[in-house]
Image 1 (cartoon, one colour):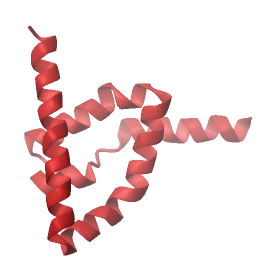
Image 2: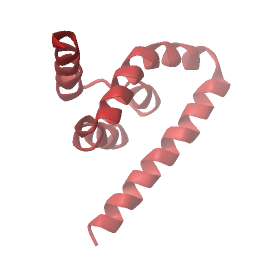
Image 3: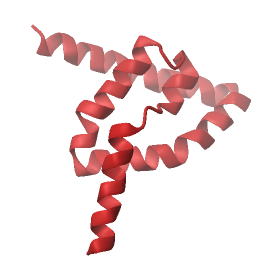
Length: 100
C-alpha cells in the first residue's frame, strides 16, 4: 500500500511542478500562447483526475522520443502539428463557450 501511495505522490508532484510540454514546445516554442494553453489544460484539468495523471506520466515517458522522431521525419512532424492544432482549436472553442 505504501508503494502505491508514494507512486501517487510522485505523479502528483510531477504534474504540478513540471513545466514540460515536449510536443507543443517542439511545434510552437516554449513560450508560445498555444503551448501555455496546453500547459494550463494539463494543470487545471488533467492533473485533477486519476486518468489525467496517468496520461501525463505516460506522455512524459514517450514524448521526448516522439519529438526526436518528429525532428527526423517530416511526416511525423506534420501529423503532430495537425493533431495538436486540432486540440488547441478545441480548447479555444471550449474556453469561448464557457466564457459566454
